[in-house]
Structure formats: C-alpha cells, structure tokens
Image 1: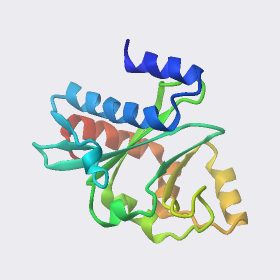
Image 2: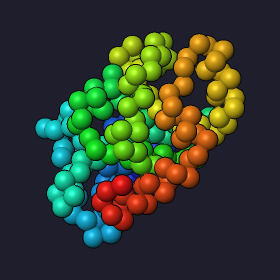
Image 3: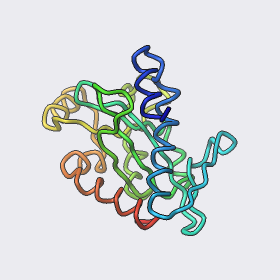
Length: 184
C-alpha cells in the first residue's frame, strides 16, 4: 500500500485531515529530493521548533507546509512566525493537495526564508482561526476576489502573498530548482 492510497482510504472516512496530510507532504518532499540524488534527513518531532528536512550536503533546512485546496483557497500556517524570524528554516515547501482526490498533489511551491519575512511583519489580527495563528500564507484561485475581501475586512496582504498569487509559476519553478539542486 502506498501513501497516496492510504490518504485516499483515510480521506474517504474523514481521517486524513490535519495529522496524516502534513506527514504525507513531508515524505512526498523527501521522496522528490531523493529522486534527484539528495539524501534528505527527516528531523522528526524532537526538532519540532525547527525544520522538517535537513540536506547535509547543502546544509539547508526545509520546512514543509501542507494545505488542502478547498473553495479556491489553501493556507500554510506559521503560527506566530517565530520559525521564520528565529531562522529555523532556510526554505519552505508548500504542498497543496487537491480538493477532490485525497492525497493527490495539486501544486508544490518553494520559498526562501527571506521571501517569507513579510508574513511576520504584517499584522492581521482576527484573520486566522486561532489568535496565535496569524502568520498565514494564502494561495488562492481568484486573487481579485480574495484581494477585495481582504480590503473590505481591513486585512493587509503581505508582499509575498500578493506576489505568489500574481506569479505562482515563479514559486513552482523554485520548487523544481530546490528539488534538483538542494538549494535555491
């Protein structure tokens, strides 16, 4: 049984959700890196405040975020943003899963830590579900509608979020570069 099949079966029973999907994304990224000759090291729970994957030969730490594309939106959560500001990662890979088919990867995006810094300096109190979860990166299908909604609700849009949604091909290309070279 492969991970895609496991996600499909568990998803049919509403069990994939927030525990298996992030792990699946981590192993998906590690597998893609290994297919390109890299030897990713999974850092595991004891490094919970750090990144998920370490590439020893490039000395790069990769944080993997995952989201399910639902109603035209998916989100990567960085809680309060300290993981970014405290330099606990070099890169972030955002794996977006398909809305219809559980376990099917819809899109993979990569960012440098520097690119994500504007998330930590943009205050959006009340934007996230939890008050300590305000550092979110949104990938949306209809950016114009999203931008209008954000403006109507007085939520600023961080530079990286604007750029991502206007130029997603750049971040898909960065993922391909990271997977191939182990660095951006």
